[in-house]
Length: 201
Length: 182
Image (cartoon, rainbow over all chains, first blue to last red; front, side):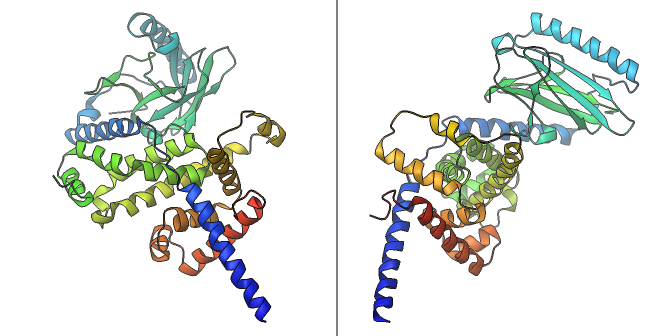
């Protein structure tokens, strides 16, 4: 028994030393990325402004894109938006790496609106969609390569109403959608695209 | 001049001074990031988790019942975000086949001894079940009491003690021969 007790005590001491060693190493400084506070404050200010805008009823009066519900007119709308996007992309705004974006919206049924977001960004290694519908989380809605070279796309159901969104290229570059001229620019000069789904009145 | 306390900053923010939130973020970001990195084992995932956590914390600041202990409250939100990110990552991982040999070939440079040790421990930690990993980190790295850990995780104290014990056993097994015992 004495030998057992001595061995147990020895094991416990070794355990303590082991845990201390592991914990000391894991406590090494791990500084957050330098731009973290700036990113958080950007989103926080955006949140505050949006809340104030909603409180004033401003958002409910904006309605600039109308979504068609028949298959034929949905395709036509997609073409119109694509052409408009290409023009906007060339003349008014050019995203990083000359990326061009196209967004189109179609509806499969009267109650579920499927919106397809497409970005032409040949030099991008990743593209994600952020918006009020995914809580602006970068990793929530990645776009995937969609057939043609450099084209990224994702489709997702959205509830009727106005939605703000942007693309995140290569994990860091905030890229509004040049396919739509409906945008909101905040006090810091950041532009966010707006899409209307269904009856947004 | 005395630095403002966390509770004073929270009061300022709730009074409408949004910019004061940057002070709070700056004050707690490194600890939150370290916890997220150790728990998730990935800096990109950790960065995503804490950005999201700080935005959520701002939205819910009025619900922080104990502003003088905002640090523990933030850690709880970071913990929840890490769980969400880990869940998403697990789904993503199902689409890839892990090739351990390929992973082992990725880095051929010899890191500094301290970095190598940290990497070995992080590698082992990543293989500990997430509940146990979280309990170990809260206990020994964040140095919380079991009462605080229970409040943060919602788990009972006996359950947390069991998780910590199992994490230690698992880590010892995984790190045997790595020089940690000395």
